[in-house]
Length: 498
Image 1: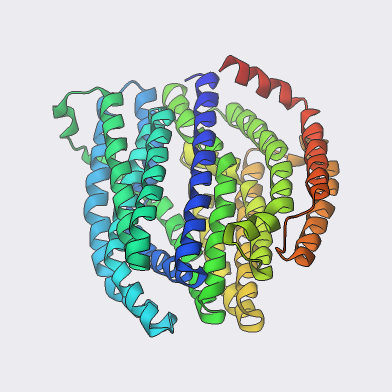
Image 2: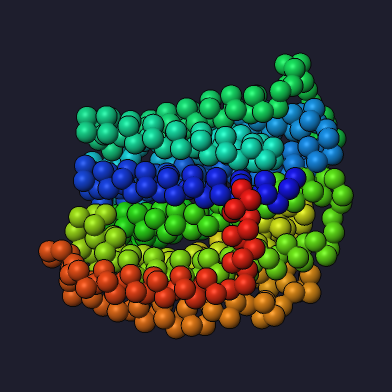
């Protein structure tokens, strides 16, 4: 597989993420207008609790991209199909059973967290369809990984974009009539459409006879289970993170701040995805290459240096500019000014920026098949989140819970970053961009200024035109600093080639 194909897949993935980000903002703005922030908090709590059923995935979807990439790199398409079929059968049965088994647990959590009796009844009605949506999401993730393993990211992106449009259309049609309780059915419906589109794309790409889709390989299945066991630990860590944050927010601050955290975290993660979606192509790309020529230490070092430097050049000014516009964006999004919402957003932005620096190490570990430190990282994040959340939530309430979550996320991310660099004898200080310091020195005071102005503006009237001029100057200065980096020439050459 050529670097040109990798660049094309990365661009397609980033473009799809930006498109879906726009749909997400429109979707949640509509929810805020029709349901209110408190009901969004209820939905966030229900979906996070039902997400415990993801324990049944056992890392299967995460391993498909690597194993399919290995098989295709070794020119064994029939074994790639067997890998996909076995994983799909496993997920259909095990995730479905987990969804059924945890239903009483979900009911118990909701009745002990949501205080409003009417909202409890609505939340309980959401549970069956939401569990079905989690089950369907496991299949969508598997099919996405299979297409990525085939280096056919464009098809995966098209299916995801169509699914996002369907979700928005169904929301505008159903929510004004049925209210909050229809959100579970809406999620299941658009995920089902995505799954059908992805399956059709996969059948077209593989172009293998039907009989090859009825196969089983015990040796490969056991190998996938062993690989999935490492990823399963990461799933446990993830479940100790997001659901726990929402539960603690529900206990220490109520549903309103839970709703604000849902909106803020969704927005920041979607902003982050615009960058990480491109870097996720590392896993199938290098898995295919390893399947052909084996693992090369020198090539892994070279890949890490290049991706880490590029990530810093792109993500640093990107996150700083988001921090500048975030107070105004969030006020427009909900239609009302909320100081708590802005603080939650800025805290999440800092935590996810530190986390994004670990993406190259995380992805290359997955491609190589070394999952020990990936698993350790997720367990540390989940455990520290629970510990810090209980402590800071008790003393500082909901904002303390959010700070605790981002502290845990940052500490865990530094673990996998430092471990990878030590293992492959890499020092990040040797190739840090020279523009990183002036960009940061420009961006941090700019964020402070725009946040201060937003606190005094409080959403009354239209922001003055000079504010847009100042923001444009800051953005132009950061773009100019990034443009001076030598890696820019290599990036531009790849874009022109594509």
